Image (tube, rainbow, N blue to C red; front, side, top):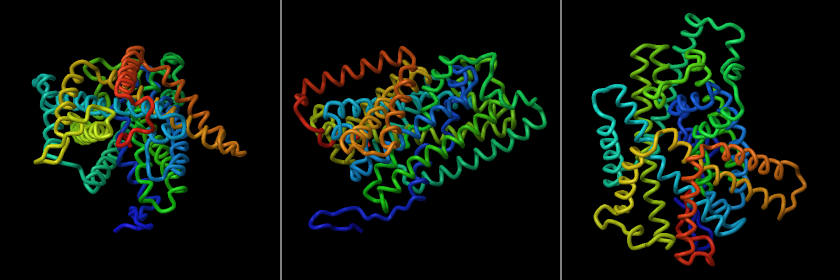
Length: 447
């Protein structure tokens, strides 16, 4: 049922704050830090908890900016729209193009992780075989138009939450009965004098932010929320806070069980958390966590590829990309078949060219551009144009911009170079297609 104002239909505003919180947690997943645990541990020399908490601060400021901008544009929940309409259409395009990189990279890192996890169970099957299998699953499901329903996602989030609780039970029992940490060792996951280095910590933090990727999706529900001016902001901030604290507890328990003074070997780094599960709970917990994360990453990879295909379709329909190819819809299945096949090929190639760590950093390159853009838009709208006298509307987005910018600068050099190359390609397309004098591109809304 819709509400009607004049002749224009509107979605019914029926979602409450708790609906948004559940939705946000489902998007991010309660097991979010587990997939990146080994990579962050190696980069930050064991300071995963600290990296998770620092990135949470950056995300809380940014979440506040997303919530505030959702008040300004309650029917369009995307960094692309916020930046394009508040700052500049071309800057909005660059933010949207950067987010497209995230959509393309997400199924790549999911395929890499799933292949590594599958090798934990069947080590004799080559990595290349698993990559082709999982990319085939992602692409095949999307060619059939299979979408994961919200109900399935909710059950998946509940199942993963139970797995987290089971892991924490075994980890606490192992730490108390086997490790017997000294008072100093209880604090070592936060700060280890022997391995601490600011540059390494912030390099790890630049990857740890992947834990929170997806929180901005809450703003896409603005048209269906009761009191969106209040609830979108609260839900976005609370989701980041809940996920951040839960993630910190998960990795804290893992670091106590497996002190990180010795780096994870290359054969274990991508799936390090399941090897921690093996130590604290034996093969039962190893296989349970491995299977749970495998299913979660398969779902994320399939959904990310579907979202990317629709985003490319929107860009083609809006003439930001050649419409003959990207806006084409298969007459039988009613899906953007060309885009799905193209993304399948990109996922297959990317899984062989990139490592999980490189893919994660490159994904965060685009995400941080979007985050900095939203913080800048919130600052300009609330502090410059409205000249709001309150401190928070100006200080929060400014701090968010600065923290996100600092972390962005600490990304790996290869990720920065590839990201800049991606932006150059996007700018070239923008000008070649004559978009320089246009306003916000219709149909191009990364969401």
